[in-house]
Image (cartoon, rainbow, N blue to C red; front, side, top):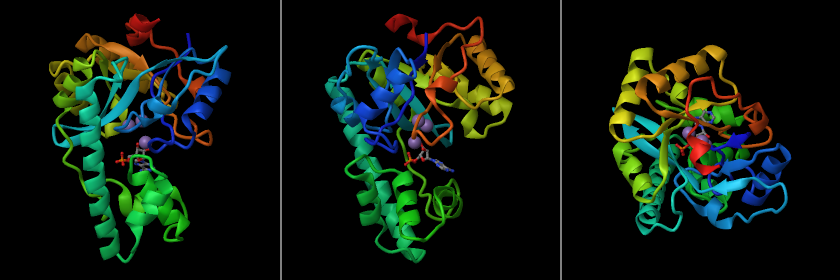
Length: 273
Ligand code: AMP
Ligand code: MN
Ligand code: MN
Ligand code: MN
């Protein structure tokens, strides 16, 4: 069964409207889909079932949180999307994003790039604002040649306009998700640039905070990386999730490229099918 439990729409930093994403996923043969925009449910709120052959849509979100001294991402899946506490937490996350956006714009102004807040807002077109919208503004205004250069020069980790956020602790997001009846997944564990033992520590912290699954099957991972994630998942007694982290059809992370789960792992999505 092809599932994609990690995707973005133009409600955050993805390129496609929810309906267009649904049609693309249907064409790719995806049967169970979660839209997991950064800190917003606006994509879910807009999405409509597309009929015959359409994937089943599971409520989803990708929360930015703080683990031990670093930002990590936690996916919430299969929760009640109308849960008032969860909706409040989403609104609070958007407020944090708004404050960070103002700080990023101040920093860019100091670096000689005025008008970045208005520019990023225009790029976002009402979506929850993120660094990619600043990156698009920097490209559109000719400050950098491309998106990657925007992160390399200004917005990437440790760069002058990165503006480190004080996100809520990892355990808080797991609590929000559980209170709304959902499951919490540690997103793309390989991407945090951690040593093997630091990654094991992060997985331990996630498990101790009540987390349910690790994201294991993703496009673009080497077999060795998937094997390592599978081992960590088994060791911790967690379940495994699968997703493309799709942002754009120009990208490499298409749902058709999600590899199968390695043997011996319990699929998180079994409870929804
Ligand atoms: P934010 O959630 O606003 O901090 O923005 C993070 C998003 O920016 C990620 O979800 C990626 O989509 C994108 N991103 C982060 N780092 C890079 C990078 N170095 N190059 C390109 N895109 C990036
Ligand atoms: Mn993103
Ligand atoms: Mn992420
Ligand atoms: Mn993502």
